[in-house]
Image (cartoon, rainbow, N blue to C red; front, side):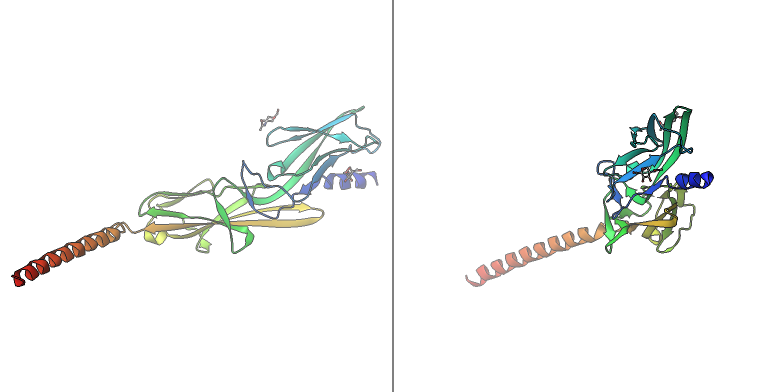
Length: 256
Ligand SMILES: *[C@@H]1O[C@H](CO)[C@@H](O)[C@H](O)[C@H]1NC(C)=O
Ligand SMILES: *[C@@H]1O[C@H](CO)[C@@H](O)[C@H](O)[C@H]1NC(C)=O
């Protein structure tokens, strides 16, 4: 019976951030709508805690725990948790019988974590698009997918809805796509799909974020059009001047 209680305790050390948007950055970290309390207790319910703390694995930041009046439960509350608070925490408890440690998790669905500008695609909070890249033919393009989530999201790129085909001029470096010499056929919408999955409160959630990046390839002769307009305008001006001069001369000749 005791074992059963222990397992329940271990399962309860999981939390998930409630996010209603997907844009975050170092300067403006995205905050969850609800506070989160992480907690841990010794496996043996008879044991009291003298002192406890939570240490975040990603940056080793330590949070002093508050003990319950019975000293059986150590808690820490994030009043307004941000996506940067997601991750694994190690709870260390000092008890009269020595040190006890537990892992605690705060999950976060994938969000964009970048200073780049993104807008929501047709009002979908978890489908974002960037302003896009317009490049000259054969000018290198680097497409990044700056997402954050816990557990670490798995990324997949598609182009115009089909899996991205790699070639001599399209390669991947980690999760970044590099178009080394884009041709007109390489223009289109490149989408990064970031997925993570977690089980919390007995429910498994698979969370998706889609980030679209538009690539346009300019014609190398595009500069000719404005130049042609300027030349034609100049030519027309010259013709008008010549015509006016000619009419003036004719008028003054006929008035003699
Ligand atoms: C955190 O501390 C552990 C052990 O002291 C060390 O191995 C690890 O590299 C540290 N991590 C960071 C992100 O500082
Ligand atoms: C410890 O405290 C938290 C927050 O108050 C609560 O949700 C949790 O059930 C408590 N755990 C135990 C074993 O009492």
